[in-house]
Amino acid sequence: MQPDNKKIPIKYIKKEAEDMGEFFEGASAGGHEGYLDMRVNSVINRDGFFYMGLVCLFIWWAFDSFALSHMQNELFRQILTYGGYGLFFALSFGTLFRPLATPVRFHKKNQEVYVWHKKVLYRIPWDECEMSICVAKQNEGYRGLQDGYQFNLWLNPKHAVNKDLTGQSHEPLNMMHNMNHHTVVYGYWEYVRRYMTGEEPLYIEMSEKSRTPRFSKKVATEKGYIKAILIFVPAIPIMLLVKPNSMALLTPFKAKWPKEVHEWTGERCDWH
Image: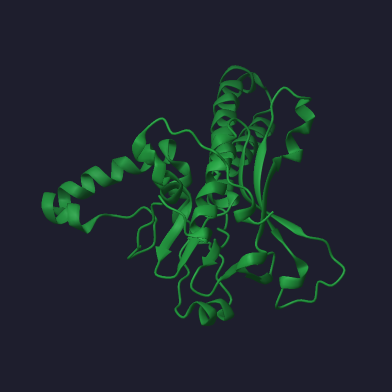
């Protein structure tokens, strides 16, 4: 189950894709000298419920316009109408901006992997890091019509450092789940495997700041702050619709690493 036990053959459509840079861009919280932070599924896959909520809001608006508007009891109509809007708004935006989990820290210099999951801190030796790809259980109800794939990092209870989990079974940490394509799940696996084994080609950049959307001062200096703001503000709702997973990184609700991880890492970094 260790990364170096299985090398997945991948055919690349484009030569420039061989370094797998798309997985760094899409799933990494930051590259550093000596370690790499990779986001988990609950952070990189938030768009599903967001879009579902928007669709439900549209359907509810249509239902309100053509059905509820004819109700004679105005008070009951308002309660039902605003209750529906509130429910679907919470489904869409509440799930999008819910608290962010900490990434998984692959510390190559220390030859350890650090995980903070459900208030349990795991310190995993490099050669005991267990990962696998499996058919996701939540998709079995489709009865073969559609397979879901999931990339799991298995948390061994013996690696917990702040709680005694003796007698408990391994806990799967969902790194990526996809119902439509298994390629991206295998790609994420392969990216992590290459990093852990030092295999090339592999794209990674040393991040100077957190990899979250932000107002570009460089662009503002070049184009002028007023013009940059006039471009930036209308772009926010567009980006929210086009790249909701990226915009979700702006939530102020973020889990923090325990102080032990900063001590092991040798620096403080709480990027998500």
